[in-house]
Amino acid sequence: MSLNQLQDLQTTESVGDWVAADFRLANVFTKYGIDFCCGGDVPVGQACAEKGISVKTLLRDVQTAQATAAVGEQYNDWSIDFLSDYIVNQFHAYTRRMLPQIVEYAGAVANAHGAQHPETITIAALLPPLAEEMLDHMDSEEELLYPYIKQLVQQGATGSPLKPPAFGSAEILIEEMDREHEETGDVLEELVELSDGFTVPDDACNTYRALYGFLTEFEATTKKHIHLENNILFPKAIRLEKQLAVA
Ligand SMILES: [Fe+2]
Ligand SMILES: [Fe+2]
Image 1 (spheres, helix red, strand yellow):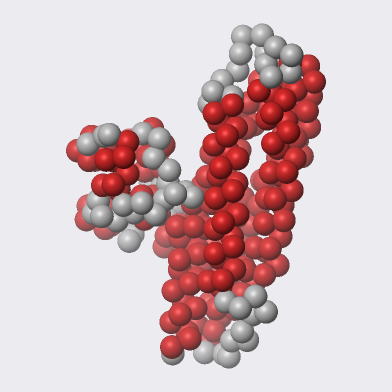
Image 2 (tube, rainbow, N blue to C red; image 1 turned 120 degrees about the vertical axis):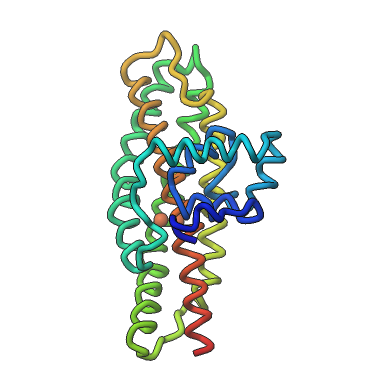
């Protein structure tokens, strides 16, 4: 589905598909607490029913978002080898840059404010394992999955023979990546709940403010990162792998 098909959006299609067609809709779903990244495979109609909002209300917000925000990048129209490079340069680089800083700030905030705000101690404890998991996960994507996606694209273009990967297939590895995305999503949700949506208390110092500012950006950026993989890159890679296998 691409942007010019948006007028044909069906509520039987998934939340992830809608956001893949137009990233401006991410804000609309977020407003209603509808997950568009790890849990984005739910049909839009069902997601609305679960949150108790009418499809009509949602569609009004969709129209407003499309009328008022710039179109932005058309990720769904990009070739998947280009998209994988973009994810590495944009999102993996950001994650590697930010995580050490976030871990350090969270430790400092827990030390200084843990007595008055015990949730900061839990937040500081959740972050190092999250960082370790995300760094390992991105290494797997960059060392195994993404090079294989590039091979798939190359084979599609040239007809050159494809060597079966040591990890079995894109589909097998992607199942593992999806599971890891869900684990990351769960920790992010926990951080949001613990911090009441990263709300800074009145007695917060500058480090506390900076930490919650970083976490706000990190949560939104990571959701977009996972969305681009789960809802665009991965399904397209699996489809291409299947097409090439029968060709
Ligand atoms: Fe990634
Ligand atoms: Fe990923």
